[in-house]
Image (cartoon, rainbow, N blue to C red; front, side, top):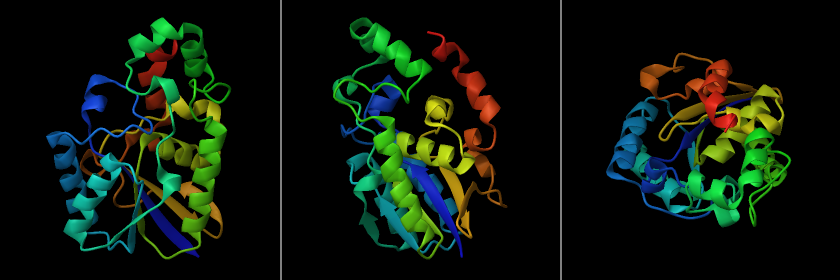
Length: 222
């Protein structure tokens, strides 16, 4: 059996613009975020999607609603697609976190699979729910669109690459970008097809992990 899953990160929010950790908090889309959703909706209109499933958080749901209106498809929510919880870090910029939790932030940057933000969700818990969602998706008809968050998509990419959670922060997923995952005969992989890289809609980090590592080099050494 063969299935294509398209993972769409929600459009831009004000907290994205100001560099604040969002997690389970729920800021609204900016006008630019709505434009990003409309742009990707035009692309997806050509792909004959079977279903749309979405995180219940508002920024993802509004993004999905814009796409669903263009495609004429209903929306189903799935709690497994909610963003990783960042606990006490939510709403804070990195400079604020560095002041209050300097050692924990350093460890999070170096080995995010070994620590969690205070009151936040360990990556192992995020991985379990992402794996559950991917397995269920593989059993259904496709292609399917899941509108979700950077943490969920990063984890799915690592699953497709069969790479460890320690590389979580090396996967960069832009607002309003798509990641395509391919299931065939029980095997998960990042999809390459005629849609790859089109108009910058697809996340380049998925096809060029070395580029992502270079982008994060300075940040990881902070």
